[in-house]
Length: 148
View 1: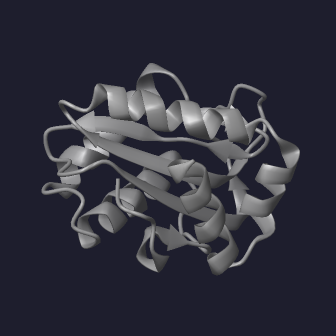
View 2: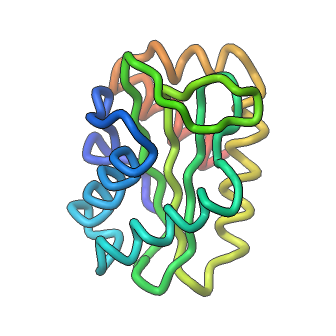
């Protein structure tokens, strides 16, 4: 997986609903060249949310999807000052998102990436760094996590 760059972050994402946030992620993935079909990837993310909320807890959600439109595994990050109702497991609204995309044949990659992130997301210091760090700090944190 390629390292995250500044184009993979949005520290002031717009939107106040699951749909609007996921649409922004589909746009970001398309602009970065990670996907070939924006509507298809958005549909993939929405269907995954319909199965079960990706709201992890502590104000963080990990929307993710596997699709034929995904060219290579990728990670995107966004946050905003206001929270969005994400139907999270702890009933807390969400204001930080880590979005993952993997090719249709990349299930092992998705499981590995989600596992790596979930082992970190349970630590309050990691969460605080995601929520308070500047772009450079968040990029370094995520790149270090995904390559270790």
